[in-house]
Amino acid sequence: MMSLSKHFLLCLASGVAASSDWEAVDALIEKYKFLPNVSFTAGDTTGRLHTFVKGKLDMKTQIILASSSKFPAAVAIMGAVADPAVPLTFDTRISDVFDWWSSDPKDNRSLVTLRHLLTFTSGLVSADFGSCGIKCLDTTPASHASELPIEACAVEIYEYGPWAVKPGTVWSYHSLHLQLAGAMAAKAAGMPLPDLLHKYLLDKLGMTSSHWIGNHGGVRDPNPHLAAALVSTGEDYDKMLQAVLTYKVASKELLDQAETDAYRTYPNLTTARDPKDVGLEFYGHYSMCLYYECVGQPWGPKCEKAGVHADPGYFGYWPLINRQKGYYMQLVVERHVSLPPDIIKKYNVTTAMIGALSAQCVSPLRFNLTDPVEKALGVGSSTPTPYHPLPPELQVLCAAAL
Ligand SMILES: *[C@@H]1O[C@H](CO)[C@@H](O)[C@H](O)[C@H]1NC(C)=O
Ligand SMILES: *[C@@H]1O[C@H](CO)[C@@H](O)[C@H](O)[C@H]1NC(C)=O
Ligand SMILES: *[C@@H]1O[C@H](CO)[C@@H](O)[C@H](O)[C@H]1NC(C)=O
Ligand SMILES: *[C@@H]1O[C@H](CO)[C@@H](O)[C@H](O)[C@H]1NC(C)=O
Ligand SMILES: *[C@@H]1O[C@H](CO)[C@@H](O)[C@H](O)[C@H]1NC(C)=O
Image (tube, rainbow, N blue to C red; front, side):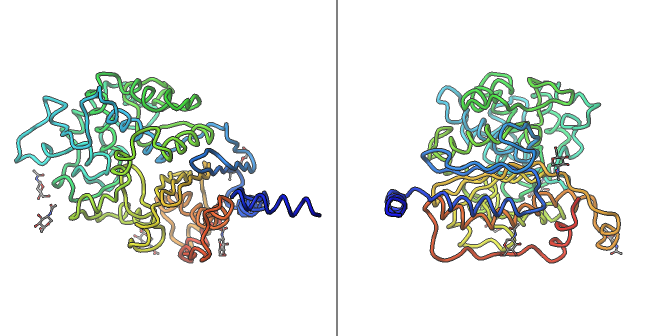
């Protein structure tokens, strides 16, 4: 008896979580039927502090990250920005890197900088979230898009991309901006894009089970689809989250810029008025390939102050960094959703809506985890985080998901 309570007091005194604190976290994950296969990790600046595995997806399972590929690609590009040997800053214009790119001030494209590209505000506006019809980003297996020279892909986007407005005025979420950013960084660094990804991310952080996959399975293809084609594991992504949290991938000065709300950087910024971009406001504001999290509520000072930066993906992967409280966590997920035909008919569900469900249905778990995770990490507050339930129709769809 004595020694038990003494142990308990010691734990409290040294700020170490009692193991029962993590049990509450594990129980929430265990209970959520929508995710039969999921891994979870959390940690702070001292490293990883907890791991939980449920079902058939462990920390070594290779999964396709879809949009959670975006932040790792941006981290690699930031590595080049941070390297004094590479002539590249967030304010470098793409016309300074490619001599064929217009520098005529009358041409909106001449104004595009790396900062615009990484915040998806380059002026390329599309209702599509992938290739936007550009051949060099075609994701079908029959395509040879990933085998093209990356600079040729940049030329194609320059010529045929949906350039619509001045940079810094409209946010539109799709793959073209990041592909140009990668082309620009590779050119500035004087190396093929896959080498850049290895030098500043995969090799640097020991992410040995990760690679961008090409249309035919190539893992060193010159033009990998940066925004969508990363194959990785919970183990590897955990390394990156730790490295970002502790400023090992780039200085605080650079990461502060990367984590700045794009709507602060560009005060006149608006969201593109198409269903896809309006729908993505669900997650919050955007910064450099990260959402400034503000899920299911209008953007406001509370979200900005909370300082949570997340990169949720199409299949429900949900990694995040809480800057204000100094921790990271991730739900390692690859959830493909389908719905029973009667539900599809009754609720008039479109294919796009079904696609969006994976991450939307992970969000209640992600938010319910906040308080128990913070308690276990010793950074909790006495007021519970308010719960923002999903709209009733979404709740029905998540419960019916196959
Ligand atoms: C969970 O994993 C098992 C085994 O791999 C698989 O059969 C099942 O479809 C998965 N469930 C979901 C919802 O992904
Ligand atoms: C350049 O941007 C402005 C303002 O966003 C837009 O009105 C104009 O049509 C654009 N020009 C071209 C040639 O796309
Ligand atoms: C924002 O728009 C206002 C009004 O059109 C304009 O005066 C101002 O210069 C713009 N600011 C930026 C940073 O572009
Ligand atoms: C179902 O949704 C489609 C596309 O959003 C819309 O055009 C159609 O009118 C809807 N049908 C019903 C019965 O609500
Ligand atoms: C999250 O918490 C709410 C409120 O307590 C509860 O209704 C909901 O079922 C929980 N969802 C998950 C996935 O834990």
